[in-house]
Image 1 (cartoon, rainbow, N blue to C red):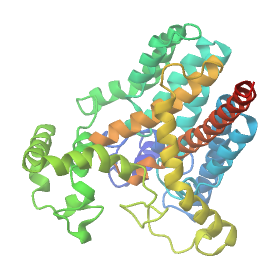
Image 2 (cartoon, helix red, strand yellow):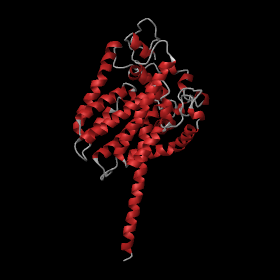
Image 3 (tube, rainbow, N blue to C red):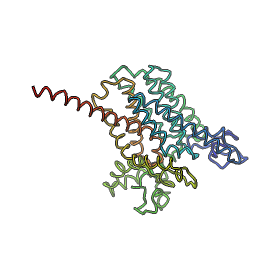
Image 4 (cartoon, rainbow, N blue to C red):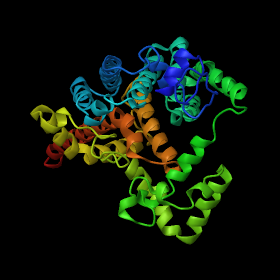
Amino acid sequence: MNYALNLKYHHTYSRANFSDKVPPADALRAPGYPAFLVPFVESPPTAFMLWQISLAQALLDSITVLLALGIFRRIMAEGWALGAGLLTAISPHLISASTYLLTETLFTFLMMLSLWLAVKMIRDNSRVLAVAAGLVIAAAALTKPTLQYLIVPLTGMLLVTRERGNTARFAIPLLAGFVLAFSPWVVRNLDAIGGTSDPTLTINALHHGMYPDFRYQDIPETTGFPYRFDPHSKEVSRSKESILKEIMRRFEEEPARHLQWYLLGKPASLLDWNILAGMGDIFIYPVTVSPYFSQPVYTQSHRFMELLHWPLVVLALAAAVVVWLPGFGKSSSATAVFAVRLLSLLLLYFIALHMVAAPFPRYGIPLRPVIYGLAIFMCSQILLWLTSAFSREHVQAPMQTR
């Protein structure tokens, strides 16, 4: 909020408490969400201001569902796509996130828009859409910096794909769009703080994610915020070098435990249902009133989605691997193969990134549409394989009796 107020009234990007004085500039937070808030914020805050922001975020949430459905229709039959779209529409995490002043709703919208543009880029064979996709990926990365490195594997995917046409021609326009939108922030930071970014974000990501099970010395009361209880937190988080040194020391002392945490525990935490560092369940910050507490439609949809959560995650992870196997998608269009592999790439990218950084379940909320799409796609493929196997069995049986 302070970023948005200082940006609107002082034309300065700063997290300092808003006042009549022009504050010093900083770069601790990415500028995307504060820029989104600028048209709405006012000082002092009002209930109408919060209502406007909530309404805008609800609208973005609704468009996100349509974007997801547009992608799902490219990778599976209409009925399956509608099922995945319905799961996205009733996702309690996505709905709940839109009620907070947090980046998740805007980021999810921009991320899904960039995926939709990338798929349409392939379908329409359009370099203009490649530039647009690059621009939106940058906008998403400027909202949540974790996405800024996706441009590297995505460009690599375009360069190496040769199965149905040459997608390499989209790599340069995509990169151009990304650089065009992202570079002004880098140049601004060089001028304002003397560096391309604030190292605090990287340090915190490494620091907050180094505690197995998000606990300090396995003390239950420290769950979610172990760094607040660690008396050495300030010392080990002085710099990137000091935090990396501490992580290496911990691996040397308990290699098995930390390998398990980094390779298995972190992905499981990122994809977990329960918002660990928050109120819990689907809520990030405490709420006193919610339709998920009392209204039957919401409570039942919550229960339904919670029961399905881990089966959907497992199916999505299986799909994320299957789509890269040799021979996959021989009977599918180039657009369909690219689209499903793009969803897989994004899911695997997020998992890999948070195996290094802090895997708070909140950070996995934007992955919900991707998980639902891949999971339902996997269901459609399993049914297709079973149907094919059953058909072959019945064709071969009469021949064997002759």
